[in-house]
Amino acid sequence: MIIKKDDDVSEGVVEEEGIKNVIRKVLIGPDDGSSKIVMRHFKILPEGHTPFHSHDHEHVVKIENGRGVVVDENGDDITVSQGQSLLIEQNKNHQFKNPFQEPFEFLCIIINPEKVN
Image (tube, rainbow, N blue to C red; front, side, top):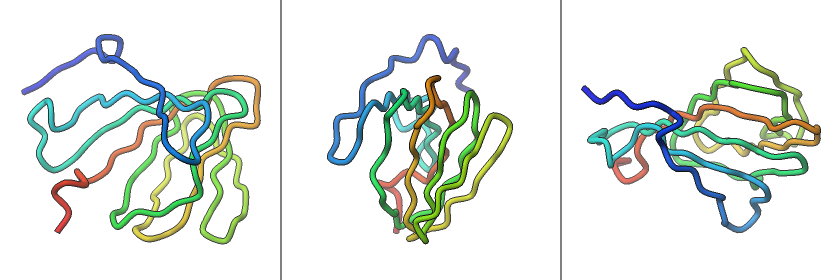
């Protein structure tokens, strides 16, 4: 069994195309011996966003703090906030944005992309 404190996990700014003001922590993943799933914590700072994108796998999201906007596959903006959970289906375009003044934080749990197929 692996037990970790979130505060002990290093975080890093995500520097990929289409991403702005996003910080990520891998809370549990391959480095911990989890071969099939990965749990990540994202913090989107004010005016930050992820790209409008899709994946070959589904993932679940739990809003942990603040509020933000999720853009669905039709391009519609949906405001979400702490205490809500989402299922992002595989191959459905989506985006996370933070047009607000406080950080927007959420957990994202996915299948390890290296183990898909």
